[in-house]
Length: 78
Image 1 (cartoon, helix red, strand yellow):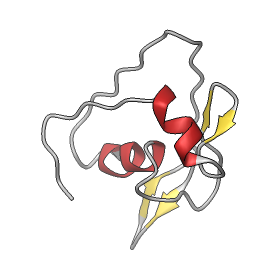
Image 2 (tube, one colour):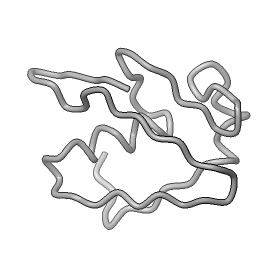
Image 3 (cartoon, one colour):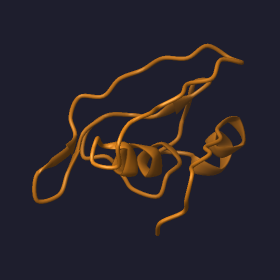
């Protein structure tokens, strides 16, 4: 996945999880997490890449992919 604004925010991020696995992303707010998480849950579209949830493309069919994903943050900033 890749996304830039005035400068690169997320560059060539890739990850794979099996069904039932959890992924914990820790880092300061300037480490790309404020951009990556909204891309994964469909609030921001990446410039390049795909987001698959158990084989369902979250960018093509968000309603089908969302029940298979979840995110938890320490604060909501929209």
